[in-house]
Image (cartoon, rainbow, N blue to C red; front, side):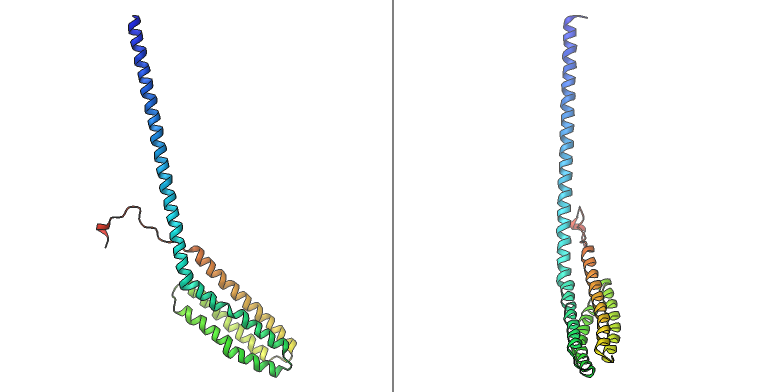
Length: 200
């Protein structure tokens, strides 16, 4: 082959190699840009989802969780008052009278306050809590009646321990229900593409 033809062929080959290299580099760069854009978009959507979930949980806290918790907490004090009356009472007649007063006023008012609030909120969580408090109330009323009819302070104290266990179990389950509900709250994200003209 003529030397000039060989040189021309070599240049052409080099040009194709350069063009191929540039095309490959452009493809890699373009792919990197696509990956970067996708990663940014996904991170943005994730951040938005987290913020929306947080906002929904904050609403739940204000509207439902905090009011329920504020109505649950007095039960611990009421149970302590029952315990103090039994431990410090001098006679069963005196203990029974004081137990009846606390049951009629503080304990009943606590129960009706919580049930009234739950009745104003429809939903699975309200229904679960209503079921829990009704079950607690029936069993606790029976135990308190047994305490009032006990023949000795020791017997009354033994019955109170059952009442305390019942109350602790009720409070524990109620708090778990609230935590599980709060954890499960997920906001509905807006559509990726929205068309205002088609909105109703």
